[in-house]
Length: 320
Image (tube, rainbow, N blue to C red; front, side, top):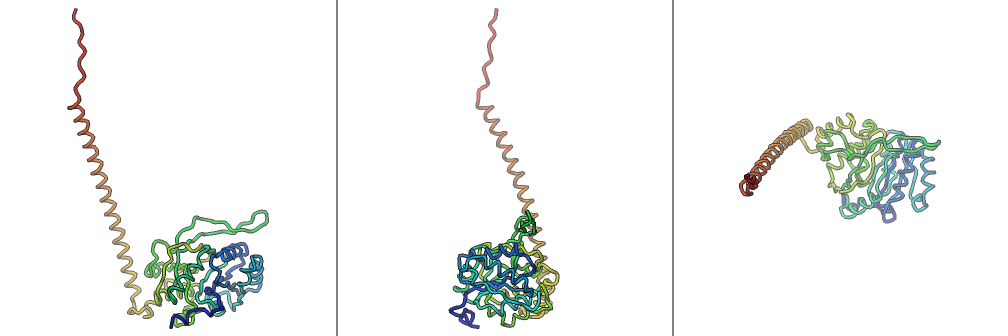
């Protein structure tokens, strides 16, 4: 596939943002749309995707409340099912941008996310753009009859300490929001991941497979908050799917390689843990030695003062 085939048509937006309406969350969707309307780079479209006509109508009304410069770039897309795979597939089929970003109606993005995607996609056409995502549990509350969203815990980086492909293979944690991929990639052989039988695991599996096949350009920035109530990743189904994909030879490795890779990962983690313990013991021993040296120096200093400084003269008592 050539680089030029993955560019959008001249009149088309560069980025297509797919917003999967996975529940009726107008209070959260309002924040999602506001974060998109606030992007510094406006060369993108927003596709609101759902199988529920009522949810699509509500979403479109919320978008219409925002400035027309943004609202006219928002399109509703009807899907045949609430399944994540079919929602994503419907969105990709309707998208016209060179790059695609997928998010849900609970997520929010920082103002420069689409700018990063366009910059990298223009400089390195066909590459995968990946940024850091913060996960933050939220809950819906009502205050004086009005619904809103509040944080239920502090944000934390996703997927956690391990962000490499092997770590993701072991944990099944693949933040969907932080990955932008070329639209044409979804029409390639990797599109097997858009399979209804995979359920919630379909989209993360597709993105993991894509990062194995393409150059990945890391964005050293936090690009958004994943506030999804029901996560698309981190499930046993996804972990098993990832292992199955590796063992099928799709990753250009012999059958059974996932077991070897995960065993090596466990061994590396065990050795790292052992190394940290040894380092901690060495630091403790060094601290004890430093304390001992400080005590000796203090004793020598006191002894020097005792030797160098003359003893106070005795007061003579006059004799009678």
